Amino acid sequence: MNKMLKKWVIFFLFPLIMISCKTYRTYVPIQGIKVSFDGGNNYEKASNIGNIEIRIQKNNAPNGGPEITSKFDAYSPIKRPVILTITEKNNLVLLSDQMGKAFILGEIDSTEKNCNYDCKINYIKTDKVSFKSAVAIFPYWHGWHILSGQPLFMRYHYYTLKVQKSNGKMLKMEWKYSVYKIKNNGKPYIWSGDYCEDKGGGLTKLKIK
Image (cartoon, rainbow, N blue to C red; front, side):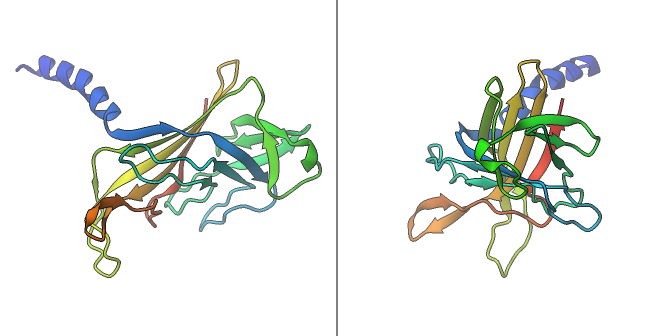
């Protein structure tokens, strides 16, 4: 196989492999969203201005998949945490990334006027909103953890929020946790709950485009 043919094989196969790397996909409905304008999650070198809390409706896990977490915020212990800023202007809630790109997340609920902490917001009616859970099909090396009894290999569990405006502008936020299978008193193995590692987990991506 010559070099050019190898490149074409890789070019076509690589996207297929990447697409297949997540399984147990399921979309879950959002129950509510709150924001805070004061303070934020503190890190060693940077901190968020404000916070976001998304709650999803209790949902049965997909067939054979792990349980789905029901609350998500801006927390992440990774070395380069996601930095965001949440502000309010004319009853609209703006979420900005570290580069200063702003996205209208929603409008403050009429019952939450003059609110600074845990304020309910409503999405703009014309926005398309989705929240997806997906488990990676391939495990990763977790390492030796004798005292905790955790396995050598785990799988990543991703959660993705997408909000798309009618003009095409989009917000994408991704949370990442780890899951593994554990013994179930002689019965078939069951999934653990979402595990947030010190080296990665929580909110890991924020894109506004």
